[in-house]
Amino acid sequence: MKTRVTQSFISGMLAMLLGASPLYAQESDSTPPATNGQEIQNQPVELPSMEKEVQDKLASLKESAEQGDLQAMCELWMRYDARQNAEQSSFWGHRYVSSLTKKAEDGDINSMIELGKLYYLGSSLYPKNLETSRSWYAKAAEAGDPAAQLMLAKMLSSGIGGDSNLTKSYEWASKALETYEKRADNGDGQAALWVFLIHEKGLTGQQNSIVAFPFLVKAAELNDLQAQTLLALKYKEGTPQLAQNLTEAVKWFEKAANQKDMGAIMEVGLAYRDGLGVDKDLAKAQSWFEQGAKLGDPYAMTALAKLYVADDSQPENMGKAINLLQKVSDIGEIEGSLLLAELYETGKAGEQDSDKAYAILRRMVDTSSNPHPKAIVQLATLCYAKDEEEQGDSLMKRAANMGYVPAIYEVAKGHLNPFSSFTWNPVVSYYYLEAADELGDPDAKLYANLLLYGGVGFIVLICALLVWRFHRFAKRKSAEMDAMEKDKTK
Image (cartoon, rainbow, N blue to C red; front, top):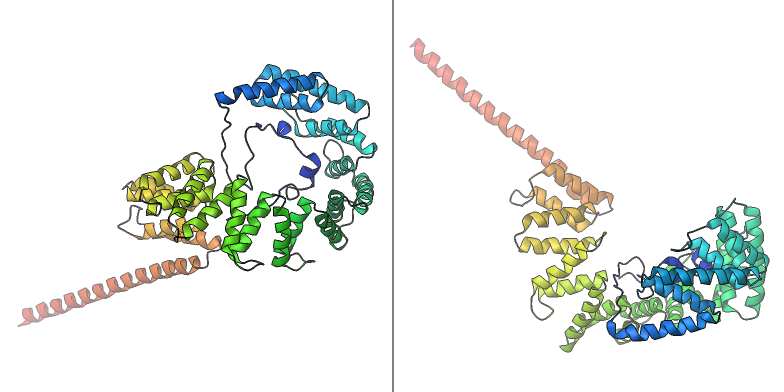
């Protein structure tokens, strides 16, 4: 299972500096974001029974907005935009930006930064304008804000919103570093993390991981969540400057998990499940996965379901697993959906129900622009069981052409089997085995060579047999001709 950790520092300096809100990213406030590349498909739901509560909330926001509350104006813009109410969305959006601009022009640094974010990312009302974004960040930087100074440094180094200027970029990053170092000395964990990142990324023109690392440790010790997860990752993976230490990794993941970071909770659960850096303890693993499941983490739900499936000592566990897997399947989590389909297909879910398995896999394949190849292969297998060979072949080739090695082998074998629904074609089979070899499969080269040289040997054998048969035929004919000549001379 692919694990996750807090993403803000992984997604890079730019994302941390922007701190993008759902409004600028144009995401509905009713739709939680997908996690680590996996396709989580959530549908915004607004039930009629909730309408009064929604209207009361809007009324409360309007009252605050009329009194000049910028946050309320912004939230009204966001909510009406999500509800596709263009008139109200436009009204509150323009009012928010107008009020924000006035405050920024009066010297409010936070308003300058918000305007910088807005024009950097763009929105339905205010398209992306990098030149304007850079000008607002520049004003906030000149007013002494270190976050704005770093963002301006980033824009100057990359030529975003204007000409690039590395010298100026390093100057602004150095000013930010000076401020963050003072704050870190006064016990600010977030500032210590920024000092680490500036040194680690070489934003001042000099990269120094040795100088950087103590600030990461300091930030983690000051209970900064991002620092704890980043430090845990460094211990888990190891770096040229830091030896891998799984025990330390679990220690810091656990501190982050105690702050309810879902990615860290997952990491700790996996560590106890697999005995990585700690003694293997399935009870502790289950406890951590249960915490993640309560927070709504679909990956923790899937991991918990796997533990239930593996533990057949309690009959009720399978029912719990099915309930969890049904939830994650409904929101499109891949691994849980595959497991649920497998349980129905094999009958481990209580009774065999290939139709339910087929429906789950069909939805996974048909509703995604990039479905998981394992789902395609499982669906192909069910199609073969239903005697839908043409559909099965099409799906299997699709997975093979996506570079999925098990599917490649199935297609290669199919083209070698004269009784398969695939057309008998050793050349095509060899092509697929070569593709598997290029993808790094250790056995593919051997099979491809056996097919190639075995095929050549077979052809040579056939040719030799034909020559031998022709030689025998010619010899027999020659003997018959000699016998006929002798008979004539008598």
